[in-house]
Amino acid sequence: MTRSGSAPTGALAPTSSVRFSGIDAARGLAIIGMMAAHVWPRDDTQGELLVDGRPSMLFAVVAGVALGIVTGGADREAVPRATARWRLLIRAGLLIALGLLLWMLPSGIAIILDYYGLMFALLIPLLFLPRPVLLGIGAALLVVAPLLRDEVVAVGAPVEQPWAAATEYLLTGYYPVLLWLPLLIAGLLCARSDLASTRTRWLMLSLGTLASVAGYGAAALLPGVDAEAHSSTAAELLGSGGLAVAIIALAMLLLDRSSTSRAITVAALPLVAIGRMPLTIYTAHVIVIAGFAPLGPAGRFAPEVGIPLFIGLSIAAVLIAGAFQAWRLRGPLEAAVSWLAGLAGRRGATMGA
Image (cartoon, rainbow, N blue to C red; front, side, top):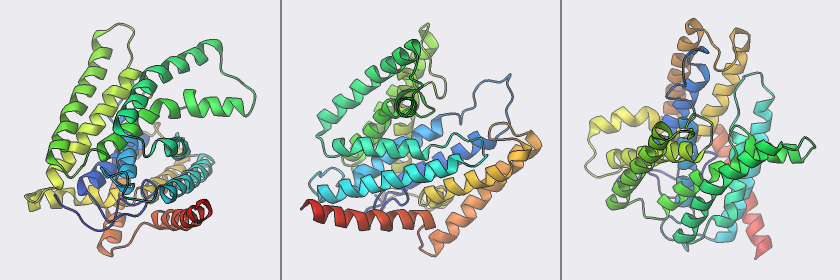
């Protein structure tokens, strides 16, 4: 197993002494995938792209894993719980605020950060529950939340504020919080199962693959079952969520072991570097795409614009993240969020003592 530096950086994790390169690489892959989903050319006659929906779900599962790592990993008693909860609450608030600011830009992107912030906030009371309880809650949400969403849609969502906004965020929006919470719980369960263990990683790979086959297989074989991107059905959550767990496990099996070859390590460096400053890279790419709005909002770029834009964004992300990595610096937004969360967390823990 390879460990280096400090904890998974960025909006998705507080500071810790443990870092898994495979998790960073999976997070970096999610960022690149979201970039592709936002700028790669498409037309109304083609079906969904491979990068539709799946990178954002991978991002969510990685977030759950990272939160589990920095709150003790397999040992739930390893960190002060009050401090951890306060830090997560502040991070959630900062993500919501940044997400709402990015929504104001003419990017055409369905911003995910404010939804993630709400997911973090709802995860706070679940953070230190035993694994069987977490599993039960995640399974219950996987079944009940889509049914509740369908019922709300059938009877008509409320139009009065703030109920309309709450309903959209929790059930009917682009990244419905109650429906996506099982993804973070799945990542948290992985972290509570000792990620340093090769057995845990193979189990994640096996179970993730089975879940993905079950979700997408059900959609392919059973009438009326949908697993399209952003449908947030149980089939999509199983399919994409299981795929995310399998990707994380495979990345760790390749990168976080003592016998990892230098060739694999070097090849993964760009993804690892991007994965260590995800909030900065994500925010920057939204701002850049907003600047190209006159040429077509996200998802509607012509090939002569979208393909060079994706290449340019990817190269810029690799160069910027690589430079920060070489200088041993955190991304500016990651550093700011971590500092604010740490400061508020210490004060909150003192008040609660």
